[in-house]
Image 1 (cartoon, helix red, strand yellow):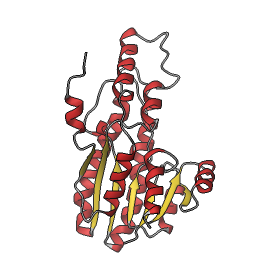
Image 2: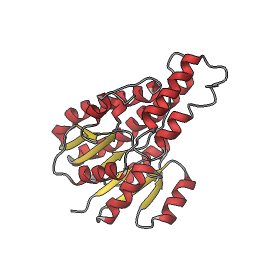
Image 3: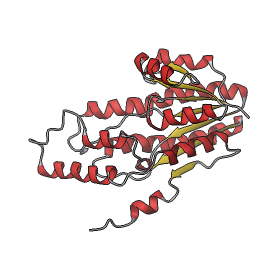
Length: 253
C-alpha cells in the first residue's frame, strides 16, 4: 500500500537515498532539505520526489508540515559535532542540540499532533549507535543522540494509545561522508597546534574509531524502507543488528 512519507535531511546520505528508493516503490515522498539551494538541486536530480525547504530550526518552516497528510515521518536531519568535552565551547554544544534535539523535537511534535487527530501514523527517529554508546571525542554528538533515545522511548509509549507507532533507528559507522567530516573537523575553535597533546590524541583516536572500516550505506537505506513498510516495529533498530557486539570486540594490535 502506498504511503505518504516525509523525510527531513534528504539532501544527502541516508535521507536522500531512502527518499529515492521509497519513491521507486510507489510511495509519495516529501523530501525536505535545509536550504532553497539544496531543494533546487534535489528537485532537478529527482523529479519523482516532492521537494521542499524545511529548516527544522526555523519555526516558520516547521509549521509548513501541516499541509501534508502523513502516514510516516522520518526524522533524519542532523548535525555532527566532536571535540573533548572539557574544552568544547558551550556555544558549539548549544548549536548541535538546537538541530539534533530541539529541531527534531519541534517537527516531531507538530507531526504527532496531526497523527493524534487522525489516530494513526508512524514516526521513525534517526538516532545512532552513539545514542547508546558514547566514546571519547564524540561526546557532543553522543549527548544529543542519547536525548533522542529518551525522546523516542517516551513517545512510543505516550502515542501508542492514539494508534501511532514510534521507533528509533541506530546506525553504526557507515560511509556517507558524515562521520569523516564530523571526526576530522570539530571546528576552528580546536587548534591542533595549540591544543594539549592529550586532547589531540583524543581526536586522533576518534578518527580511527569512526572513519576506518565504515560499512555500506545501502544497508541502512534498506532498513529505512523496511521500517516504513513494516506492519509493526521494535523500539530500537540497530544497523547492523550486531553493531554493539562488534564495537565491543578488541581491535587488532
